[in-house]
Image 1 (cartoon, helix red, strand yellow):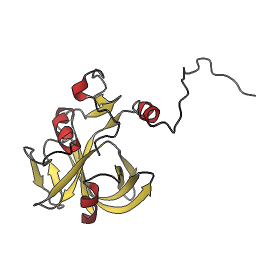
Image 2 (tube, one colour; image 1 turned 90 degrees about the vertical axis):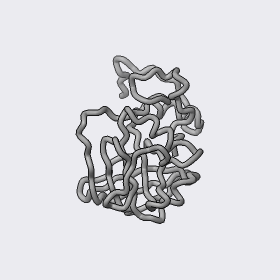
Image 3 (spheres, rainbow, N blue to C red; image 1 turned 135 degrees about the horizontal axis):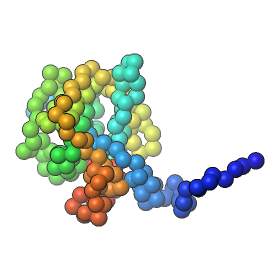
Image 4 (cartoon, rainbow, N blue to C red; image 1 turned 45 degrees about the horizontal axis):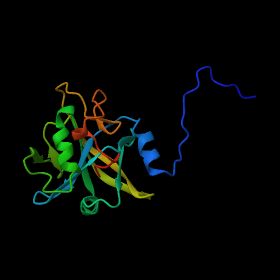
Length: 188
């Protein structure tokens, strides 16, 4: 016997195979925004990424997903180490710089070469330094698992940069075209 809920959720059935429906539905999930960096002092690399998460406490593992069509990921992957820079709400410009396909992403930004041999952005909320442990191909993305080697947390009380319904921050007006990203996950 099936019992209907008292207050059923209003629904419009949509196909998971329709890319636009898929993007609109997943836009209801708010996520933090990070910049994944790696490379060398002479050739720092990075891309904006909202598909980041912890995986395990013991051992300390993190993961991010990246489009295999990315121009940056194939060049960053061989280094075997990366830094996850967790952006604060004051760093929308940093996100735009690393989400852009134009110009050098590190120009006019404050960053340093970390003790863990990764580019580390200044003013972020946290940095997670990790070695690539595994890369799994799934769909059109790579799922990158990293074994954490070091953590840095800044404690200045700033709020995180959040991506929700195609715009930055939950309180933002989604009709503000300057801050609207047309494709969810378009940073990669």
